[in-house]
Amino acid sequence: MPDQVRTQTLRVLIAGGGVAALEAALALQELAPGRVDITLLSRSADYVVRPMTVQEPFSYALARRYPIDRLLGDGVTHIADDLDFVDTAARTVATRGGKTLPYDALLVATGARPAVRYAHAITMDDRKLDQLLHGMIQDIEGDYIRRVAFIAPERTGWPLPLYELALLTARRAWSMGIDLQTIVVTPEDRPLELFGPAASQGVLNLLRGADIDVYTSAHAEVPQRREIVINPGERHLQVDRVIALPELFGPAIVGLPQDSLGFIPVDECGKVDAGPVFAAGDATNFPIKHGGIAAQMALCSARSIAALAGEPIVHEPLDPILRGILLTGEAPRYLSARRHGGHSFDSTFTEEPTWDSPTKISSHYLSQRMAQLEGVPVTAR
Ligand SMILES: Cc1cc2nc3c(=O)[nH]c(=O)nc-3n(C[C@H](O)[C@H](O)[C@H](O)COP(=O)(O)OP(=O)(O)OC[C@H]3O[C@@H](n4cnc5c(N)ncnc54)[C@H](O)[C@@H]3O)c2cc1C
Image (cartoon, rainbow, N blue to C red; front, side, top):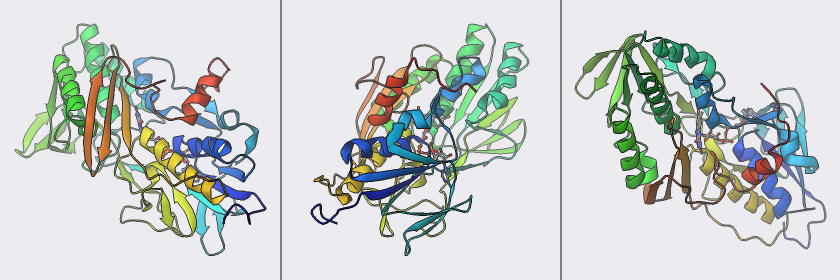
């Protein structure tokens, strides 16, 4: 509706409590002040910096948690509930708690659903990584373990933590003088290939420097707890532990379009073919599942919603820039690339950040807000 005729604020409902949902809520407050009435639907009270959980099994500090209400401030109503289904004809959302919430614009940012791919492996789950892996690290430190494999299934979305866990594990063993063989098996043609050739080469050099054996363009099977089979070649390896990334599926929200894996199809501005509905982040069919990309998608959707609310904002399609910080057990490395047409360009791999205010998940509004809250007590776990 054009600016002149819109007399009421636009009721914006955002479902989710991760980086995409929070980035959109913060962006909208700034892009369309006074024109939007924002409600965030998320059962979680806290925002957890998920990437930092990879350090927890190694006895580093717990990943930080920020109370969502403090991140968002008074401009957003937070309802502690989950989206159940969407009625696009009535423009309402039903919650699992039994409420019906109307919307003028809906943004779905409920993330992907991780699923176990290998019954005989330990599947990475960032809600309890310490619980899953701390025992293995202790066994390595006690010299009870000789060989550990880190494997990625075909349909995975978060390759970064696989390499981080491998590097952190190898580094811990090395620092204690323990002789451990660390193996990475990935379907990627090059390590972290999303970040482009320079970054892949840099990561490969790091892995080699840490004596990690890397099998690329490879598919792993885990027929039993202490065995992996690497294809092509049907190579059987005996290992003491297998750590696997989960497979990712979409949220399969009833009432919204979805692809065969449950992801929500979006256009280049995050628009869903279902009325004034947008989606951002891991929940969508965008092929890259990465926090920094989720934040960029959220910003794109927020701009479109601000335009719906009457702000003179021009639609800007997503122009994805991948930025990542790789934890290595020593100094972190900074990776970046632009993506276009399914290819990565301008790949960088550096020891110093090449972008301003680097955070593990790169975002514009959320990173700034988190920095403002630094030093303010956060929720302990
Ligand atoms: C261990 C690990 C390390 C990673 N490292 C990096 C990294 O270094 N850099 C990087 O950029 N990315 C990294 N990623 C990927 C990044 O964390 C994700 O891409 C990002 O979190 C996606 O954000 P999102 O908001 O789309 O979804 P999520 O973070 O999954 O958030 C979804 C939110 O929606 C809520 N929700 C779910 N269902 C519902 C519902 N029905 N109703 C309402 N709310 C719901 C959830 O509780 C959650 O709060 C990593 C991921 C993992 C697991």
